[in-house]
Image 1 (cartoon, rainbow, N blue to C red):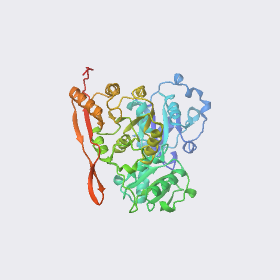
Image 2: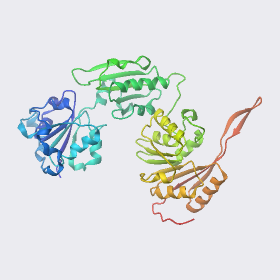
Image 3: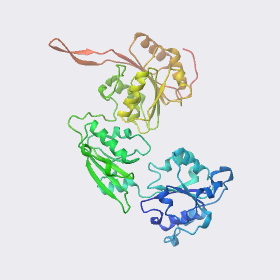
Image 4: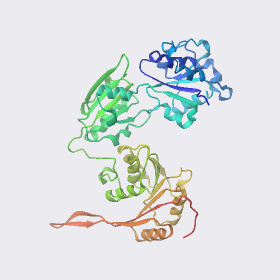
Length: 451
């Protein structure tokens, strides 16, 4: 199958600055999609409404882009112009949101098409979305120098030691896990407000002396670089097209919140229903988060386990199931402040609230441990090979875990933690309630058998 779609990375110089073979690819296209500022550099500009058939997938004809593929290797076209395409090419401006943009692309399936995208389309760009929607043979990506690369070059920051994230179309809170002493961050942004929000977070976290650098219109004639410490940051003079650089500097009193499981209990807003720090660290270790894996946190309380799961692995996902209204608000606050705003929160009584939820790779049961119906629903929902961890502090909960371990196997352990306290003038180590923990992996071939 020959690719019908070419995704062209473009810099601030626009299409005119692309090398000849890349411009030739654009000239072959019957439809070109992109932001208005890139389309304006193409001639002639043909309105999409003059080609209504392009919006109807049933009328799109199958075509071949072999000539385009050959052109990429044709040195004779190095100095090729944009191309004389007459009235056969439609220029189509992006129509956000992303779902609508994808509908525009899919309506053109089979038609020689070019997407004009900023920088490297496969690095926090449209390429990642296309990879989920199209077969690999259907499209080709032509990367341009990324804005991350340009920013790192301007700042002289070795890129392999920099956290690169996108806050474009995402909550700015996603930067929170990267705010660590000495860490350097490069972030794509939504508009001028992104930098203002980040400055506020740095101040709130005790990182007011961090150096913030705004790198606007990188690689273009209007490139501008300004820097100031977060404490005195003013977003009033910056535009909407920039990369934000943050060189993190912690005050001596700034709390340390690393991605390693076991955040201080004080980092969470709670009503006391909180898996304590030492037990939480052991629980996350047993759950074993990995990139892209989904956790169900059943009886989530303030959401501490789900939040630490998401912080521990790239793109890890979690659903927090909780029925108490005040706790739902606590979960949302904690998720935002600790940098996982994408945490999904489900209100209702479990297991009824499980209906329609995606199958999890791991489940943590922190509430209702003794409920056999709840356990059965969790066990049936868990993917084969998935892990279930349950913590109990009551005799009824312990008895249930002992019976399930005898039936299904897995590991049982007792976690005893004592903390420094005082009786009169004497110091003592006061025991907390011991926690019985059961961790089990669901067999690949599972046949439901009553215990």
